[in-house]
Amino acid sequence: MNNQNKPKDWLPGLKENWRSDIVSGFIVFLIALPLCLGISLASGAPPMAGIFSGIVGGIIASLLSGSHLTINGPAAGLIAVVLNSIMVLGGGDAKLGFELTLAAIVIAGAIQVVLGLVKAGNLTVYFPISVVHGMMAAIGIIIISKQFYVALGITPKAKTIGGLLLEIPTSFSFVNPEVAIIGVSAILIIAILAKIKNPLFKKLPAPLVAVLVGIGLGLVFDLADEHSYTLLDQTYKIGPEKLVNLPAHIYDGITFPDFSRWKDGVFWVMVVTIALIASIESLLTATAVDNTDPYRRKSDMDRELLAKGAGNFFLGWIGGLPIIAEVVRSSANMENGAKTRWSNFFHGLFLLFFILLLPGLIHRIPLASLAGILIMVGVRLASPHVFKETYDKGWDQIVIFTVTVVLTIVEDLLVGVFCGIVTAILIQIYFGVPLRYIFVADITVKSENKIHELYVKHALLFSNMISLKLLLRKVTPGERVDLKFDKNVEMIGFSAIEFLQSFKRDYELRGGQVNLIGFEDLKPISAYYGATRIHK
Image (cartoon, rainbow, N blue to C red; front, side, top):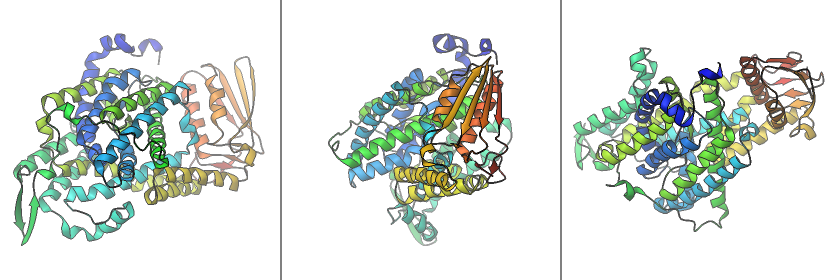
């Protein structure tokens, strides 16, 4: 697309596109409000923490961001991280755990700022795609295991994720019927609206519809008053503890960080985990949005890190959850006609106005409604389709994926990701890649008359393709790139192939030409075209 047709940025962009960006920002706000609350509660944090994150992510981080259409805010992908941090650091004291986690968020934000300043926007290249997908699937399973009980009004006995999953089949006899009606209604509403093809219905923000129905059912069941009811000779208790509880004023929700455990190793594990996962998810979302941006704009990934870091640094000081560029809200932003970063800004502004003007309405929202919404988020992250799709990509990908999922659930996110990466490296060694080329690619470059020849020997992998990315970044649009693979190449990894296909598509859309010479001579390990390829 011609640059003249692209929307302007900053104040000229606001002047040119304020109408479409306000409309999109308002619709995203309607989606974000229940998600901010639900994610906060699922993370073991006060509800206001999620609202603060949506406000700061929209109003502050959007103006620093390197992306044009992403929406910043709290995300399901960080629920497991924050919840684990609060539990581990607090030792059972949720208030103390949250304050200590805020300190970790402050430092994690500072680390992200530094990563942005040293131009570490290529951070995701060091993480195999199946590790990232496995991490997200594990997070989905963790969300479901936690929110299942909230949605049905059950108090579980188990404390671990594995224990919660095993307890599910035997817990149905303890369901609180009125709470369950609210939770199940939220699940059904989101599932049904997702299936409807009518354009008008597709515009409805499903989480908001689920919350409004939940508020109505809460009024019918009189959740605001503590009482008991009897059904089939069984007595159940219900009351305001089943509703979202917010402070009377926004400033009463401010919580300050506690740095008292900064000398403890476990504290720094939480810092690194928050910084790492928040950075990876933001960069992946920005990449995904770039690929679907109708104007083919490219994000400045270094500025993305800096913006999210600045937002998280600020949020840690006031009691907010860490933010990322969130993929569902970003997709909704594009679908509703957003043109510039100002839609993100307006979504944060609407959140601020709502919490200032109508805080009482939030107190009417049943926790079961939010749990139902989050269960559907978890189902999307860990659906059987995700497992099947990974299996179809090759045995190496499903092994890496499974190791990441299992160890994330059994241990924690950092252990799961680390073991997934180690598994990927061991598979590379199994396929015969020499150790010296695991992390360093052997690439010879020759450029002449706008033709760039890149000759690859030995292997091209997730762990060594950073050099190729840096070389291709220097190539001027509209020229020719011949990527030649030596006949003795041992392996082209799945993540490397994904990158090559993405680069070829984008570069040719900008008028260039990319030839992958010798690629077809290598043998894919499955029927999937983009599967890992090895020496025949």
